[in-house]
Each structure stands twice: as C-alpha cells, then as structure tokens.
Image (cartoon, rainbow, N blue to C red; front, side, top):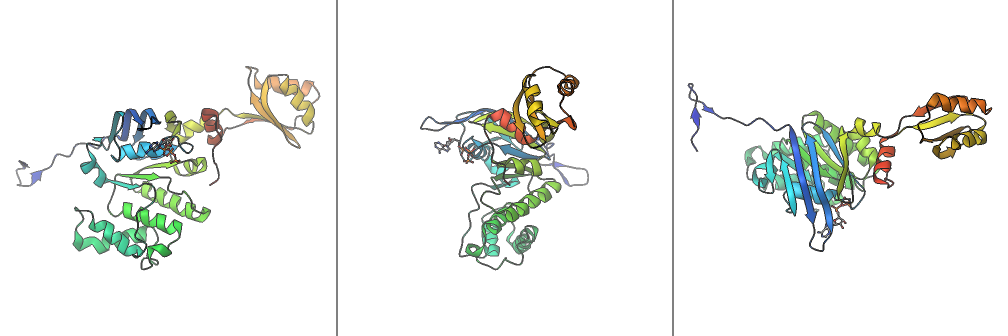
Amino acid sequence: MALLEQSDGRAATSRPAAPADVIRTSGLTKRFRGGQLAVDNLDLTVPRGTVFGFLGPNGSGKTTTIRMLMGLIAPTAGLATVLGEPMPGGVSSVLPRVGALIEGPALYGFLSGRDNLARIDAADPTADPRTRSRRVDEALDRVGLTAAAGKKARAYSLGMKQRLGLASALLRPRELLVLDEPTNGLDPQGMREIRALIREVAADGTTVFLSSHLLDEIEHVCTHAAVMAKGRLLVQGTVAELAARASGRLVVRTPDVALAAKVLTGRQVADLTSEEDRVSGTPLGDLELPELCAALVEAGVRVHGFGVERGTLEDAFVALTGEGFDVAG
Ligand SMILES: Nc1ncnc2c1ncn2[C@@H]1O[C@H](COP(=O)(O)OP(=O)(O)OP(=O)(O)O)[C@@H](O)[C@H]1O
C-alpha cells in the first residue's frame, strides 16, 4: 500500500474520525431454524462513552443480539455496525478493538490465573510476546487478582473467575467492552466488585455495553439503557429519561386510611394500596392534585402529608413490559 510522505519524511496516516455511535443496528432480525423469532426488527444506538445497559427478562433476545454484534451468528435480516464497520463482515478489524465476555470466560482449571491470561494473550497474533508478562501483570492488578495469580483457576470462586475473564478482555486497551450478564450467579460482594470494575473501565474512556436482567444493576451502573421484551426493543435512552417515564404515585399520609381510600377510589385513583398511616395510588383522571387534596379534606380526612413520589426505573419498566423484573441485586 502506498503511504503519503510528509515533507519531513514521516508517513502520514489518515485515521478516519471515530464514529459517534459505537453500535448501531437497523432492522436487525434473527429467526432460528426452528422458527423461533429471537430478535425482531431491532434498531439500537449505543453512543460512544456510555455505559449502556441492555435490559430484558430471560429469553428476550439479549444474548442473540450480542452474538450477532460480535459476528458469532449471522442475522436473518437487517444491519449491525460495530465501531463503524458492518458485522459480521468487519470481524477481523473490529474484534481486536472489542473486549467481550459472553457466557462466562473460557478458562483452563489446571492453569493458574496468570497462565490462563498468558495463554489468551499468546493467542492474539498482534500481541508482542516480549511485553506479554507486563500486560498480564497489569491486567491482573487491574482486576485485583495479583495475590491470587499463582492459584489454579479451578480453585477460584465464581467472582474471581469472572474477574479473570474481565482481565482477559482488558489485556489490551479497548474501545468497547461487551459483557453478557457479567454478574450472573455472583454473591452481593462479587457483584459489587464487578460493578466497581465496570465503572473504572468506563471512567478510562471505554464504552461498555452490558446485558442484564437486573434493573438494580442498570440503575446503579449504566448511563443509558434499552429495554427488550420478546425480541423487540421497547425503549432506549438515558437512564434518567427512562425513569422519568414512570408515572409517579400519589401518596397521602393520614390516620384516616379507610376514609381516604374511599375518597380516592371515587376520584379515579387506581392501584390503591393502604398501609398503617398512608394510602397510595395512581391518579388516572385529569383531576388536578389540589382538587384531590381538597376532596380529601372536605370528606373529613386528616391529611398529614400529600404528594407525588417520583417513579423508579422499575416502575417504568414494569409498566412498559407488563412483567415483573428481578430487582434483587
Ligand atoms: N440456537 C438457538 N436455536 C433456537 N432458539 C434459540 C437459540 N438461541 C436462543 N434461542 C431462543 O431465542 C430466544 C431469545 O434467547 P436469548 O438467549 O437471546 O435471550 P436472552 O434475553 O439473552 O435470555 P437469557 O438471559 O436467558 O440468555 C429464546 O426464546 C431462546 O429460547
């Protein structure tokens, strides 16, 4: 290939500007041979520099989407672009720039953590063997496994194995990190460690795309999210925007719970729940809040508190999907 020579004799490399979106799909569809429509006409946009949560209940098509993005399976229809290149055609130039952890790390139990990383590094034809041990040590340090680096991987806890998997994805600087359910099966401490690591990686400028069925995870770690259900994208945006879609709940604090519930029911407030000293529900009609408050007072309810509690991300997603989410985290 001919390189342009600058006047000082150095080769001028013209690198195209990095695309603003690290992942874009349009009409992406996967129908498996048995007829199962796993991903249905997906239009997804993941902006550079975000921690993007790909959220949906089990079986909603997250893993199938990730496998198409990484070029592991071909779509039935539609387009997927990763780091500006179409997939699966761009696999050889895109994958070295992407760290991926899909369906758990592939580790040899009989090798130490350090030797596992060295083996993975050696499989990368672009990795210089002379600097291998430095790369491996830095990756081990990054995930907090330096002290356990000599132990056989089969003696690692699930959380340690997951951290070793992350270390393998971080052996070289990456523009994009793709993690499929990175905290699945971990105990709360293991989850906290992985989430802290994700935040650190993101703070260093790597875009992170992670799938999860845990709302709590998305709310704590992600800046942006997309919600999938039954293979379809329901919504995508910033986490703050998504949470704002949740309609707030009216909360009335009063010792006269039964009377307040009766008044609210008569004024189109739905989903009423009554506790010892409060009643809450969702106003359905276009009655203004001051009118509702006045109606309560008029009926003789002693109103100690009256207001709308902001909806959580969970409220928004349950309203969108009609399904409960596993919010434990
Ligand atoms: N190789 C396959 N052949 C046939 N159907 C498949 C295949 N892989 C996945 N599916 C089906 O496609 C749908 C989406 O599965 P997928 O694994 O993408 O969902 P998911 O959101 O990642 O769920 P999970 O968190 O359980 O992995 C499911 O109904 C699943 O049974």
